[in-house]
Length: 137
Ligand code: RTP
Ligand code: MG
Image (cartoon, rainbow, N blue to C red; front, side):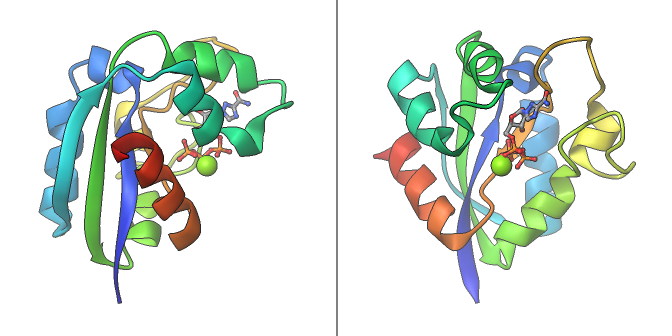
């Protein structure tokens, strides 16, 4: 069944010039990008987007990282795209993410309190709809 997901290219990915490479992979996989923009996230947006992580030790470093530069936000559509994009992204820690994944091929640890792992992908239909409303209104 066709789904949609929110993909973010986080500030590390934008700053490293990897926007094109990441979007290329999404398109090459066969998914469709139906909305795309570059945004400087607000604290309010990030508090909503990361509400599930409030109170965790990495929460404030995560918000500060997400405020450190522009993010590219995309709505991506396709059958099973929610699971499919998370498979393409790889596991949270780039150091151990599998080769062939975005995080495994393009990311690494940088000695920071927060994992700078290039991308975000929604993890359920419900979170996708919630997150798309945060980033695209
Ligand atoms: P995402 O939500 O960004 O697609 O990634 P995820 O599901 O793999 O990771 P999640 O557990 O939802 O955490 C959200 C983001 O917080 C940062 N994080 N850093 N211990 C750490 O340093 C740590 N843990 C999480 C990452 O940027 C992660 O993507
Ligand atoms: Mg997550």
